[in-house]
Image 1 (cartoon, rainbow, N blue to C red):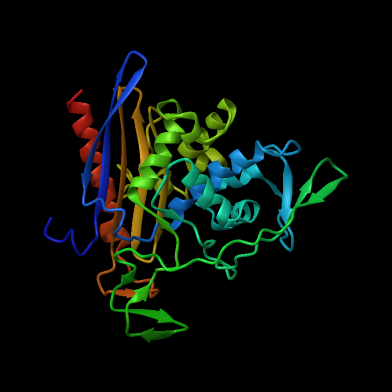
Image 2 (tube, rainbow, N blue to C red):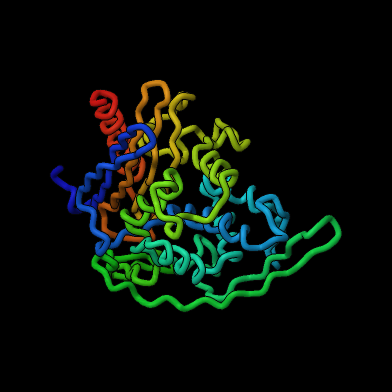
Length: 336
């Protein structure tokens, strides 16, 4: 508690009370401010996944199991496979392939139309063409012998975010040299705590929203998405010796290599980059009748230098989110 300002902590916690068919949310915020910036990292992949499913429903010839490849890419895949990899191991290339399908403008416009503010997607993740505004075509298999190529999409160039906190730290590394000035994040992706929470609510509790505010995906697609979100790496075929259960589950288990019990399901998306670590989760314990939502972020960059890969993820970031999750879980367990 003596350093929450330097760590830029933001937390939103939601208690969930069910009575008959109704669901009541009670929300608690700690330092949540849509106008104070933090880098969302891979949390934006949840947007890419759900909006891909929504877009597939507008094209008669496509389903989540349709095979495709990006023009110039060597990997042939399906939309479902890429979504599964996004949640199982937070695969950057999978996210970027789906961004080529959607385009940045469509992501931003769709969210705004559903009443979700505090979001701006401007770039892909960890790739040389991250800021390219023109998407690459997809080559789509209509059947085993026939393909179709999508048109490129020209998106709007990002303009600087006009919110607090986009200038970070006291320096950053660029091309191996230290630049002694704050790191400017004003052109990067923005995905506030409130926005993350609102997106997750629409996915887990769609019927609590007006139809215009919901994601337009089918019941089967919702089931697929929720299963992908709760998957552990081993569920998706990854080596559990390399990818432990906690690989994408920071709350409760982020600082532990222990297996997550079958009766606990965590539907979430994590992100960590540039010293910022974030998780947005719906946590359910079916054995003890516990359920709650929590979204939290903190900055762990003690030296104030960005892009130097010297961050305190293991020492501070993951232990903090894990303990926060345990505290909230125990509170729910003891206050039913």
